[in-house]
Amino acid sequence: MDLLFSVTNAAELSGPQGRSAEAVRAFLDEIGPHWLPIELDAFEVVNRELKGADPNKSCFSESLLKSYMVHRMRDHKTGTGKVIDLSDDFFTLGTTLDWVGPQRESIREGSAKMDEALRSRIGEHVDKSRRDALWLDQKFPRLPFNPSLRATFAYFNLVRTLIAEANQLKPGDGMDFCHAVMATAFASFATLDKHWKRRVGSLPKPNGLARIYSKQDLDAMVADIESCLPNN
Image (cartoon, rainbow, N blue to C red; front, side):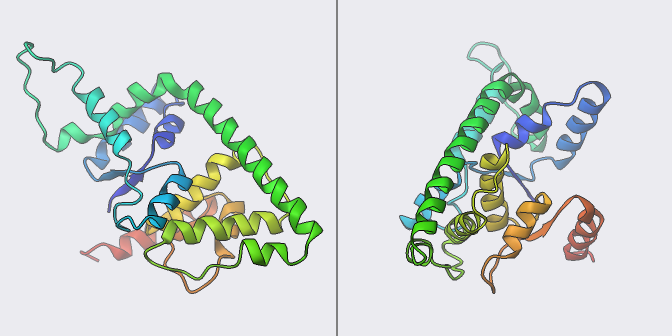
C-alpha cells in the first residue's frame, strides 16, 4: 500500500506538540518510501486530464517532490564531504514536518482564499440555477465515469452536487473539496468527513472511485485494507 500525500496533509500533521508530535513523526517514518506526492489543486489536475495527460501521472506533484528533495539535501552542499544516501530512509515522511510547519500560516491563508473562491463560484451558479430550471443540466450535466478522466468526473459532479445543495458550505470546504476530488479519484481507500462522504456517495454509478470512510468507519477501513493485502 502507498499513501497519497499532499503539502496540506503535512501542514495539518505539523500541528500536534510534545508526545503527540513524536507519535505523528514516528507514524510517518514507519511509512518509509511508500508514499506518492500529489497535487492539492484539483483544478490543475482536471486541466491536465483534459489535455490528455497519462491517467497514472496526472495527479503527481513534481513541485512537492522537488521541495522535499531540496529540504533533505540542504546539508549536503558541495565541499561538505557528506554523501547523499538514497536508501529507503532518505524518503521518510517525518522530515516534512520540519519544513512545512513554519509555512502553516501561509497555508491557512491559502485555505481561506480557496473557501472564498469556492463559495463565490458556487453562489453564482446557485443564482443562475434558480433563475433557469434548465441551467444546471445544460452547464453541469451528470458526467459518466471515464477512467482516463477520473478527477474530471469527481470535480464536475461534485460541483453539480454543491449547486443542488444551494450553497451549504462551511469554513474549510475549499480545501476539503480538493481533498475529496483527489482522494476519491486516485486512491483505493480514503477518509472524508460525513458530509463529503455523502456527497461522493451520490455521484453517478458505476464508477471506479475509492472506497470512502468517515471517522466512525476507521475500523472497517483497516479491515478492508488488510483483506486486500497479498498475504491475506
